[in-house]
Image 1: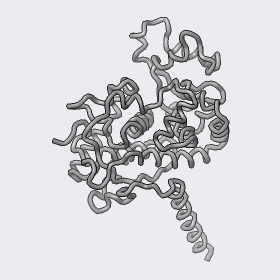
Image 2: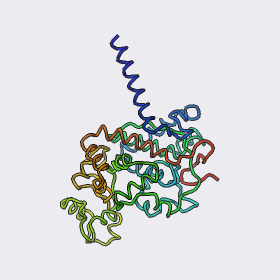
Image 3: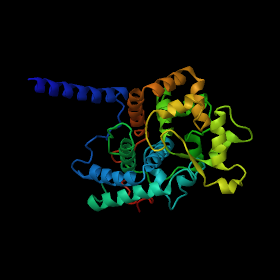
Image 4: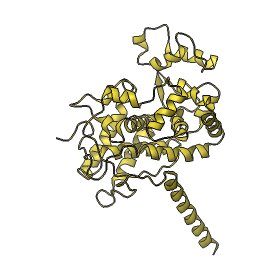
Length: 333
């Protein structure tokens, strides 16, 4: 009897979690997306993606951050359509100003490899967009993040966005809090999403050319003096800009390749790298959330799940819109 009661309780709680996830999105799930979208056409799709992501993240945990960056930079421009992965014949989004040198080519090759495996198993079925989103969610969990159920059914764009479109949509690291809020509002996201998704800065790296914005001509008041001095040593400011171009620093020195809530502690302690990180403390609502997440990882994880889910449903192509690209780097002929 006790076992039956426990099972019933767990079932009810599981249903409540699913209901809460749907309710939090206000029922605005794009038509055509479903957890079991490939059940009849490529039932092994999730297993193929998971096996490859497990292999690469086990070998190099930093690839989880690389995958997350690709998802953000894809979804925020013209929707989650894998247009970021296109490299020819058009001018690629990858060389647009906010993306140039900030996206890992090794991570893009991982997605290309997964797509090749999916094409071998189920030709013309699984999109590059779904491959990208699910790979990121799986990698996130592998490095300590929450489990995020990913709805599938996205289709791919045949065209890439212009440099101007990328610049207009990707929030710059020097934006003020009002600029950040406006950028997220333009994408149908709110302050809770802004603070939660900024938490992805808990892992990954930044190029020294971006760090220099906080160090020159004078050290930004955003930074703890000792932390700024350490950044300056790493980025070797006495070298030429060309020599510094390939240098990077960890976004989080507390737990470099782990997804946790330490980013928010860094923001409060003035050891977060970007000006946009420090700006989260310059509005009462976002500051309150930073303080909350710094002390409550479970609450951060729950909001991150909701915000990530909203982000990966931005501007999706479903049904007869878009295509299933055979190769993620080129449009179908």
